[in-house]
Length: 280
Image 1 (cartoon, rainbow, N blue to C red):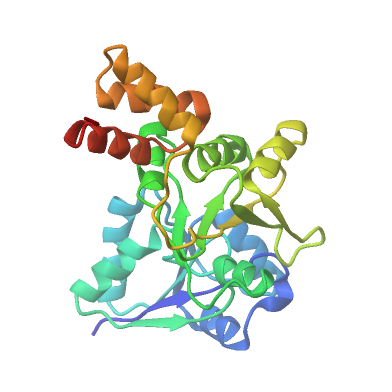
Image 2: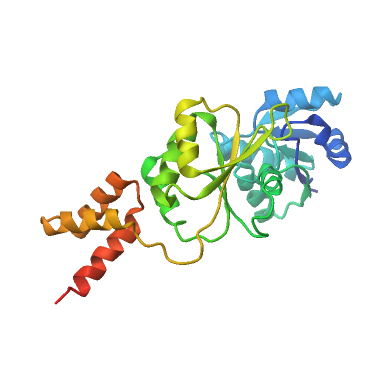
């Protein structure tokens, strides 16, 4: 008879935020699969819990997932944890959950802290809906393609970001969304230096060029106003000049977007519309 996989949420900073049920499940589990066993060991030691730990993270999830699955199928129960917050949210644990479901193994959730929801609650009245985008790719092309797909998104967009990538991400935000969108920075949530501040993207990029990013960030970018974005007049005029000089619409839009920090897509569409309906 198979055991059970428990998805156990853990605090994102303040250890007092752990739930009584989470403690009960951690004490009862046969073993604990943790993203970082050192982080898990500190948490367990604080609550005087002593259980076998196995590492389960992005780079070993395929092989280790099979091992964990076999142990659960043999009758053991496993508590899955991540470094902080809810497992399987921007986390390799999603694959283990999927494997267990496909194998018919019971999966139960032990809800608790989630950084995205905690940050959203701090922002105030920015609507009841949002879209969760998680971590952006480290690959520049993939990251910018991801952001380009969100240009017309009207809901607030929640991103996770590490401090060493924050400046590049803000530059890409400005390039994609423009300087005037508001971004909420939720940093070090539930910890001693918790902070939630709002700035325009332009102000944020300038601020972090002068200040070293510290701590883990949840970034909430306000959505578009619901109307299709038109390219800035100077960007479109520049692209039209390049096109008149012989550049292809694609090249002209790319050059103008790069030089004006504007999204390429609306400029490119405007150039295609020019070609389809030239002035008499």
